[in-house]
Each structure stands twice: as structure tokens, then as C-alpha cells.
Picture (cartoon, rainbow over the protein chains, first blue to last red):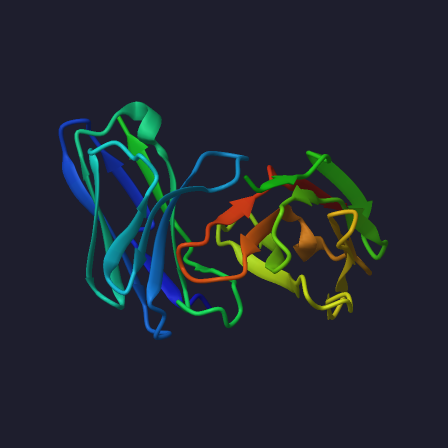
Length: 114
Length: 116
């Protein structure tokens, strides 16, 4: 059972639509991440939030807008996307300290942009 | 910058046999973590095994074990008694020893097929 929950699991949107991906964790982790993954490729880091503040933005286009309303929730707002943005979007969380180093991943949201 | 290299894009193993997946990395740090993640067709990235660089003893988790060679910067994964459920993409990953802003750096992955 995943402890990082992502919704929706699948999303199809047009290039003019506005949609959001949601991620939730209840492990008390203070760091949360968005990754983008293309088929048969490793995940690529997009954003990192640490203690609800954006700490890393990997030069992601502004059509992707992250939001961290509280320590358990992470959103990714999508607007005016391009077909090449179709991918699996993975959310992850981790303790903010050095305890284990690992990231805990959700099952991902499969996005298709038409 | 740290890099992770997986030189085997695809591997195949017979059920019940043993297979070893290779991973090398490059870093100038002395303290770091190494991981193997498994991603089955269901998509979720699942941690298989973790190794802290300061520990000389190789990590083991049931049928999974690693051969960690710090000087050679090598971190291979051995899967014993392979099962059909082991079929997945396996990613080797590196992370500096530190806080949330230290990135998890992935290799390109090895797609493992398990033949019945």
C-alpha cells in the first residue's frame, strides 16, 4: 500500500485547459517533490518543497505551477500545456533530516495532453 | 556533479535463477546514500534496498543483496531465486548525505525480464 496518494491516476486535457494534480502524505514528512517521467526513462526532478517552501525549481516552464498548502499536501497546477508534456508525474516525500535518505513515491498521475 | 551509470539497458533471467544488475557512480563526496528502486508496470517506484556509504557491510533484504565497492564506485544488485514478480525497470540512485534539497540522482535504468 502506498503512503503517498496521488489523484487523479489518469488525466486527459486539451492545450487550453486548466487542471491540477494532487498529492497527499500522512507520514509527517516535511519535504515533497514533483518528478516528470517519460516512458522507459528515469524520473526528472521538477520541484522540491521543504517545510512548505519551494527550495528547488529545476527551470520548469511556467505552465507548471506548484503549490504546497500545508505539510501534507502538494499540488501541481497545469495550464496551457503542450503535447510533449504528456508523461507520468510522480510525487514523492521524505523526512527533511538525514534519517534514511530515501524518497517515498506515489503511484503517479498519467497525463495526456491532446 | 554526481552521475549514475547503468550500462545494461535490458537483462533477462530464468525464474529461480540469479541475476546481477550493474551500477557505477561518480562523486567527490564521502558520505552519501545509494539505492535501488524497482518500477513495475503498475508505475510506483518501490525502494528495493538502501546502502549508506559509511557502512562497509553490504546491505541485504531477503532475496536482494548489493555488492558495494566504495573505492571503485560500484553498486551492483543481486537478485537470487528470481520470481515472475521481479520483472520491472530497476533504477540505481544516488543521494548526498544531507537534507531535502539534496537531489536523488537516477541512472538510466535496467529493464529486467523474468522468463518462466
